[in-house]
Length: 411
Image (cartoon, rainbow, N blue to C red; front, side, top):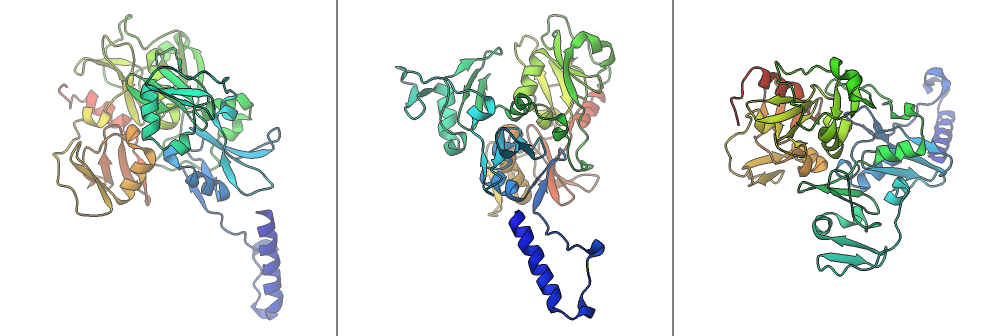
């Protein structure tokens, strides 16, 4: 990059010297304008530029790495320039413009010793790394992009939530309650390396379509329990036996906390990067028969007798689901027979990037709302066309208003 800038500057000077003096208009300040660096700004205010943007796209973009959570960082110990993402890390050797994803064992600082092949017929043994891949995790791996997940570098183990976790070359998978998802390991890498927290601050202003994030820290829940009101009108207090409030919670600067099973589900769902900050404390919704906690971009729920929280199908709970329509005769659209709706053009591009597991199936066609904004509802999110781009809409407040107004009579 430095060499290309130097060559560009030299060519600019030689071009100027070849022209008549009256035709030369020096740039302001006497220096040539720098070439525009291609880049992309995300909803959280972070930006990817230049070769990192190219590496991001090659690595699978949002669908594989998620959003960037840091600015570029020069790690002098590793000797690389790094940028941290939700689900991984991209690195560049300063002597080479090539950008490459760090392997998970580097990110997580672990790779277990090889194991013996399992006698279980539901397992596959990989001699390349000396590890087994079994049952549901194997089925998920086989149906995914294997090259981007890589081979297993550990055996599976049981987490505190009862779920199974296993490390792969480029990802960590977690299976719980019948759902399998990649875990956001970027923040763990950032913390383990001990980087300055200033690198987590977005270098650009967050757009009006993305509300500023509240900062969070681990703290005992009782210290802020009295200052954590629920926004929903007259929520019922949580009975003591209902899981969701434990001595330790993730407490946000707005005074609200995420604790217990809700904290486990919050982290599994992508945490602050995906759900945003909490907009309410956990409360019992008598009509739905669920304990809910609402966030900027979604909600978590727990059954009265349940032992784990889960991502709630918010737009379904708000009653926003249209009757099925025929498949569009348009190559720019994908049709989903599961719900009978089309996802087209830029909405389809964003849907593919973010992934069906996170957004769910489409519940409506694209339509214009009362503000004149084009939008489409999915099981777990709403996408809207704003400022020439498709964004996830912060639907948490809409959901709270719907529940508070009694617009939903029951499930």
